[in-house]
Length: 413
Image (cartoon, rainbow, N blue to C red; front, side, top):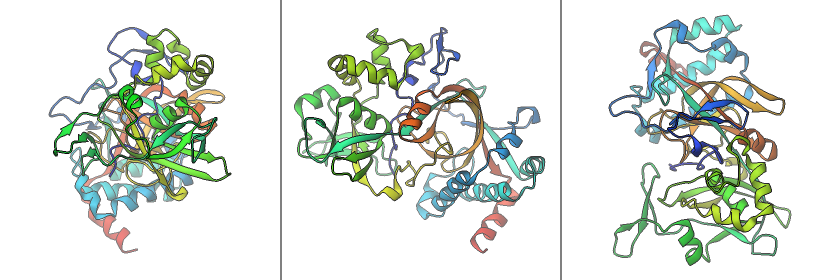
């Protein structure tokens, strides 16, 4: 099990959210109060609270209307994951045991397919399921939703005038928690552990020379791969390489957007990846130096195209149906209803959809943060780069008395 599939989809702006009461414009134009969205969950509290007031329920009928084959496929991926014996170790979580979590996905999948209309779906869901809301960053349910994507880059299998920045494979002395994949440090020859050097120190000393997986065009391309933790790379010979996350150093992440704003090179109200690319073309040395402010260093391995891009649960993520959360506070693999707004090519629109909690990320910490997977390539990049909106998040679990029969029926069709 990996610690994360990619570091953050809030490539540019999530780290700008602070405790200040000032207002900040989101990439989509919304004026959002600066809030500590990464406020840790208070000790002894849980991230989910069962809803008892019907007025607090989300629009279940609208979510039913948005169902599609991609949702079904994402649910099937979660069910397959639950069927692995190794997944039992991640439960109980938020008071939900493994059998209940698995049965909940199975039963909700069936209800989504068999309900004849939205009203019936709603009434049957509330009869069979308990609905839980995230406490969010403030105890009132506020969650910041950002976006992430899988970039498409140009690459070579050896350095060239065009592609001269390497992505490295995992070093043998990188130590991680064998259960969670969380980075622990660098294993020393005497068996001790030490903190990894900063990115600046690593780039200066070049300790990973000889372990290059692929060369991409420039430091910004490598940064984009590091931040998202995966990339589809079009090689110079016409072939395609799929790379994904294979560990990171134990240093903290700092977004390039934060560094650009601190250097007064960019306005946070209009900052997106297109702006960053333009700044890099205009001032490659300056922006390249700011990239080095991010001390978190990511390593990669090659993936088969059929299993890429892989989320933290070990299977491919699904555009607009996979959500990434902090797995130290939220249960893995379950059905989530996300109620927020998303950026589209025609402007902002409401987003009320069922998704699956199938991924995580280094900047996705605490109950007030979540990341929506937008897909692969240029269009997904635009959507992910513009995703910065508050909203609410809900989980669905079968009432305990209904669990055994669902699991038995699914196992013996």
